[in-house]
Length: 269
Ligand SMILES: [Zn+2]
Ligand SMILES: [Zn+2]
Image (cartoon, rainbow, N blue to C red; front, side):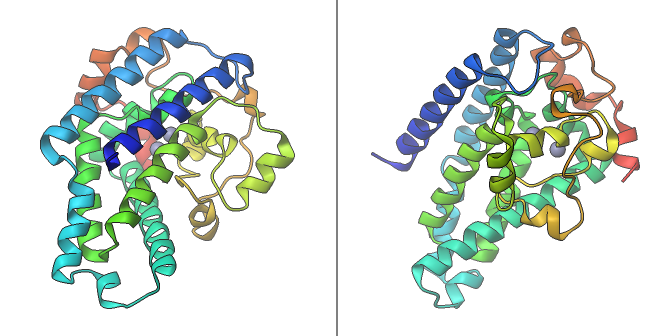
């Protein structure tokens, strides 16, 4: 088994499990057709996976090998114990993608692509992979740069990607977690209720709760919102410019960056 098989196995296992659970219990009522949204989100995922393979095939882990062979990156200078190095690498990468997420909300050009992620009218396990291919390729370049600067071990990169992949599915899922469990998890991790606030049409709520894995960064940097204005089941999901399913078809998502309809979100920060 190589990294890719493990990654695929984890993805499919978590995806099918959460999809089944969402079938039996839902935190938030839906407004769009689930099969239609699954088709679109998985279609985008397929395009993104193929593009990443063609252009960057294994580049993140490759960059980690490359850096370690040459002694590049902060972690290759420091001689930390393996467990500490792994922890530091995971935290650093998580903080870096938090910053990237803030940036794609603040810079109108980046928001044109990121709005594809926010245009989903419902959230479920598949929303975690709904990104415009250009944003995915940009993220990959950013990640390779981070890895060359940091010099994490290849194992740390694989572990981080596996955590991110699993957490992206969990935090976008429509599962009703008991309140106490949500509160306990949220002390450390991002939960579905916390991330759903980020997908609210309310600008102040969209521009909050940027974290992917750990809730720490939002709490530390003042971008954390505990509760939305509305109760969770009533949060309106999406962005103001795209309220109808026919505005967010597969092809319209690909062409979405051509339209500059979402300025209000980036200017209000
Ligand atoms: Zn966002
Ligand atoms: Zn999201």
